[in-house]
Length: 327
Image (tube, rainbow, N blue to C red; front, side, top):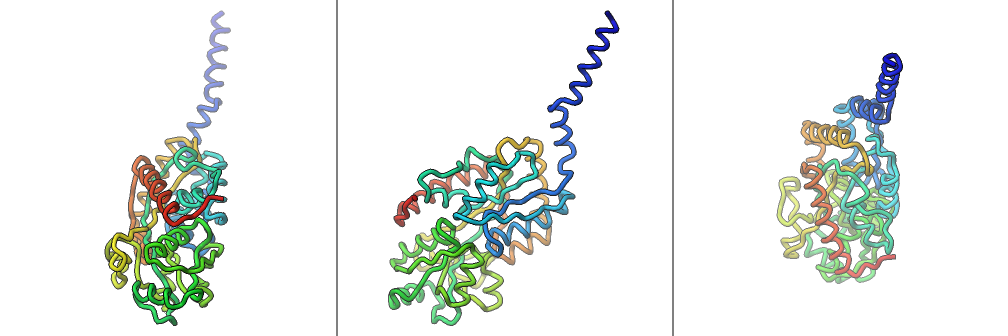
């Protein structure tokens, strides 16, 4: 009898050691032991792509595993968000969550395929990005007032570029037009890089886009930044006034953070959050973010969820105010 009981106890211990629970514990303990995928729901050259690469490059060093960029542009970020929602919740897929992909693009769909508050687990916020009002340097426009006057004097000849329907540049541009009482033809492109390039080439005359998609071109003289979307002046853009100085109350910027697929073990999410916080404190990352006129803002999961929730409410109001319709 004793042998039988001992045998049963030995089997039970062995079964426990090879159970999914034990395997799961080992997976958390050893995490990460292979490269991670960072899903970027935007095209290469966009603001989101630029900042994701700045953070991802150093995050690789902190985690001790390569972070591989996976750009999945399309539908204002919807495609990338859907892929992230369906990904394996094992901690090896991280999604760069943004104002546009998370809260704007879905407002333009009658049946959005994801809910940002229910379908993901939150790692945390890491940045706030102002939008920059840009024109081609060949135009006689050096201020917000001059842009408004030029638009009114050149109807049908002053086109606005955006990164696509439902993008942050689309909604911020539509909002700007409403407040400024101007009317420009909206020309959507496939991503922020392409929309900015169109203004450089003179295909479009202006855009208002996240700063990281444009600052290298501004610094090189290929674009002129005439204003930004923060409510007051910022040291990040010392020579650029706020749009609110001409249009009182104008305030429309974006945020960035990381999600993981719903069901990712909390211990893994916690490890990721600690690694991201350490990454954002690195001098190279701070320098890179400042060069892109982006403010580092660290928020934990609960605080970041509140940011997203508030953004959903605000953007729903803006979409309604500018008359955009869901398809």
